[in-house]
Image (cartoon, rainbow, N blue to C red; front, top):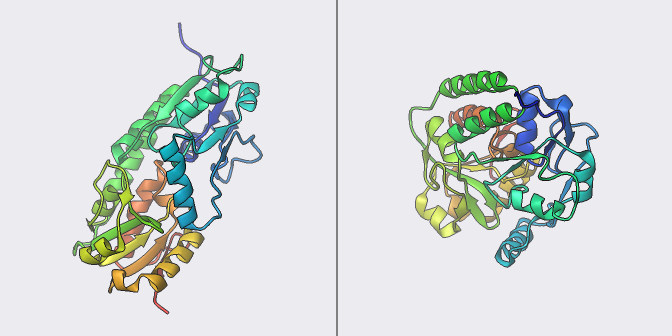
Length: 300
C-alpha cells in the first residue's frame, strides 16, 4: 500500500522553506516560522517567535542567548494551538543548532496537551552540517514530500555547481565571523566554502560548530581576508557590523581586507544558497564585489 504524499506542510526552519520552494512545493506550505523570509512565503500563518530581541546590540543578544542556553530555556516558542489547527501532514524542523531555529523538543512541548496534530503529523528534523549533509537533507525532504526525483535532480545540479567554483590560486588566510561582539568564527559548512573558494580557513573545521574567539587570537592568526557574515542578517546589516568592526578593532585586523556578505542568502542557512556562497567567496578573494551580496569595507 502506497503512503499518500503530505499535502499540508509546516516549515519551522528558513532553510527548509527555501528548499521546499526549490522543490516546487510552495503550494503545499501552510505555515512558517517568524524567520522564514522567502519572497514567495506570502501571508502564511507564522507559528514561532523568538524570546530574544533581534534588534538589540550584538553583545546584549549574546548575553541573552547564553543565559537561556545555560538555564535550559528554549530560545523559540511555538504556537501549539495554531499548529494543531493547521493540521499539517508534515512538520519540518532541525537539530543542528538550538540557537538558530526550532528543535523537535520545542515542538513536542508546544503540542503536548493538544489533541490533534502530533503524533499524527510526521516530523522531519534536518541535520546537515556540511555540503554533503545539506544535499542529504534535500533528498530526505523531497522523499518525505513524495517527490524524490525532484530532490535527486536538484542535488545533482547543486553538486555540479559546487564543483564549478573557480578557486583562487594564492590561498589567502581567511577568517569568517558569524558574530562580531563577541567574535565567533564560522563553522559547519562555512570552512568547506572557504576551502572550495581557494582560501586557507584559519579558524573552524568543516562539519563542526562555530565557536568563540578573541581579538587577541585574531591578531595572532594574522588573517589576510576577514568576512563578516553575522548569522541571521543580510548584507545591509553585515555592512554596518563590518564598518563598526573596522573602526573599533583596527589593531586586531591589521592589514586584512574586510568584507561584508549577505549571510542569510549565502552562509547561515543549510540550503542551496551555500553553493552560491562559495562562488561569492571565490569572487571576493579575487577582490571582486558581487552587487547585492558582498561589499568591501574600507577604513575611514
